[in-house]
Image (cartoon, rainbow, N blue to C red; front, side):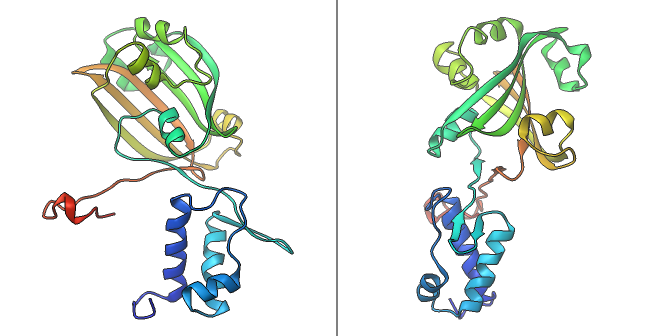
Length: 248
């Protein structure tokens, strides 16, 4: 490790961050102490403290005077799969749930999203809800569906079952493709209220149009807590065979 050009504390923080991302420790668990990390990495206490300070600043760890350093949070992240929130969270070993805020037919003219016109209908079915991970609010969802599909979804318990899970397993609709856009945003009054943030706090805004063939079946506009959720994109060099590894 010492032969690498990057500063030692940066190398250590990177390695520890990867372990945190891979959920090697649970939220609330005691993190290894400075002496243990000094032995593992064969570095000085100053180097270890600088690495840990970086992870504390990023929100991964929390120092508690007289008690030690504890795991503060772990990100929920998505890859390039057409999966629903419930599937993603369960795969990470957490417990997903939802609070349904609105289930009703709406006139698309009352909304500003131009993509709604792709449905070729003046009215759609809106499912609005807050989704939680282990009872912590993560995302405010506004999901628009053709009325006949939305009415069927509304018959299910959406507090403990995801819409994609219902669509594919219960209704037999196999979503084939989605166009997804992600951008930075700030929390407005509504987002701040439901996500337990302050107005103006940074959030992620994701907009996704899902298709069945060339027919749109859902427009989802989601607002995520940026400190709890992120997107990970795996990039592959076309000159590298799959068995040679994934570039990230």
